[in-house]
Amino acid sequence: MAVAVEREIVESRLGPGGRLPTERQLALTAGVSRAAVRRALGLMEAQGRLVRQVGRGTYLAPGGEGSLLFPTQPFVTSPIEIMMVRGLFEPQLMGLVVMSATSADFSEMERCLRGGATASDYLSWEAWDKALHGSLAAATHNHFLIRIGEMIASARTQPGWGGLKLRNSTEERREIYRADHHAIVKSLVERDPAAAQQAMQLHLRRVRVHLLGDNHHGQFEVLGDFPPLEAG
Image (cartoon, rainbow, N blue to C red; front, top):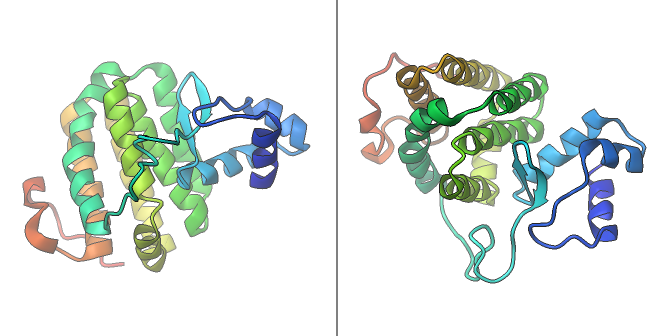
């Protein structure tokens, strides 16, 4: 299905930042279901090749000279740096999401939760996981914050992150993360910024412990004390 989407991009002569046809149009063109289109778009988004904007559509990721997602110099980082930035950035978004999110934003979060609930392998889970976190940044309606979120999403496509996540991915852990995601979205829907921030902090601490071990370089001490995490 991803090949069919790529063919549509080529035939439409879309450039960086170009808007893709709707899911319905892609499904009709390729002769497949809209669910298959969503899966393909989710995987391409996880690879950093697409950007979804709630209420606006799906776009080719920006590229070329000076792009934040594809800078002139190779963008090299590490899982440690990614988790440090996520720990500083994502919990702080929660208050702004509570203030700014619309019903369409919450619908997108719920769509991502449903997709994550059906993900049974690493690639599909990572696609929906990244899409959910992207929907949270999009719900701030702050273009600068959304761009920072896109940079974090792009960093998650690097081999160092992907290889580490793949080696540590189990169904048990995915189930824990699903529960975390539901707690985050529930708090946001209830317009409870403190609960949403704590749920996000706990979620990121779980991810960090699973990937890097407990108290790695001490950079997450700011998150406070939480109950012991599952070792699975």
